[in-house]
Picture 1 (tube, helix red, strand yellow):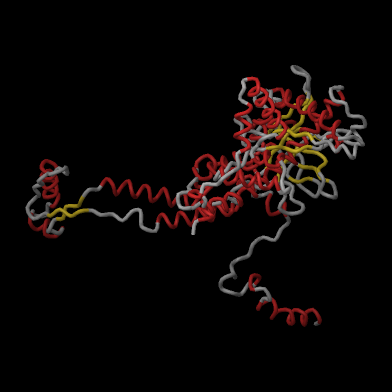
Picture 2: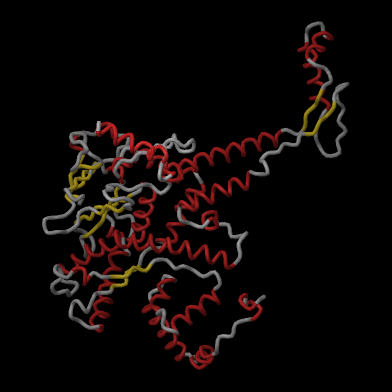
Length: 511
């Protein structure tokens, strides 16, 4: 009785809905009944199809393919450059030691990262691997990297192997449960303990020959704490074990828009083939009556006459069959609303990808300097976030693994490295340059920021993909060479000239 009373009391609130978005009786939301499962329950069953469709879009849709390339160019570009920044205060050292130690480590890192010896497949250097890892993350929702120990050519034995995320799966002799999520063994807190990785891709031509022995269990860490698997993916919800592909939120819109554009294109091509219509005053009944029930003979004679006498060409006089008239064909395809509709859909897609519409479509023809700069600044926030995410989960862990080997081999002096690994391995990763919309204005702004103390040469150079120490060293070499050639006085005169903006190009001064 008490339970029934409680249900009667709560029913009006449920039906009315304190939050209109939760109403199940409103006509607009009555059929809106989404899943309310956990992060893994909502994702893992749909993940294989999401991956397959996401990769299909990247292959066959021009805008999707261009979006992936644009994001990759701005986040990774030609690769990340290491700027070692050991925490000398935590290590009880000074800046002189930090500079010398950093220069030595960066030089050793370049010998490893700029060769193919860092790749287990010996096909890519570290920059190429970084691009591959990032693109795999967008295509598959995640990247899987195995740090390996492969003694052989070169000084270092640390190498990495990038594998397809499809190979991470629960083997057939096991099943997903509280301790196993799509090939990942986890503990009670959700921390990964081991990864079950297939030795071949499930889509390979010999995948049907797989058995329980085709899977390999790889622990997340070695007994002494060295990472054996790098699983790089975004976590949108707590408890999420796998990553989600880039176009998941707009996959349906991409597909439908692609079909719509193809249909309009096919209609336009067909319409372009039709030049005009020829109308006859006779209907089918009249033809049958006139020819004694044989209307086919009339149509055959008429078509033969038209075929032999009518030619659509410049200045032509076209004789028609008696009683016929020529009507022009003016199709309305594509419709006037085609371009605005496609633009609106592309803006929806751009918003989902956190990219300005202009950058997604590579179209800045309808924007001015201020709008373009605002759009690019918004995009730069997104790219910087992605770059930090990639450096934290990919570049930094690989650097720490490599540095551990360099220290153990005696190539780098780092007393107490195991106890202070994070202090020694602290680093800043320089990505591709942001570029300038108006070089004169933005160079002057950079100079002002440094003059008033809100920025540094290191930060300004990093925004352009440069290492400030290399810039200064190169400038010093150039000035030395100019002095040897007797050009230093002229260079000093030019350097001392004050910056005088051109009023004709000063948009801020215009009314």
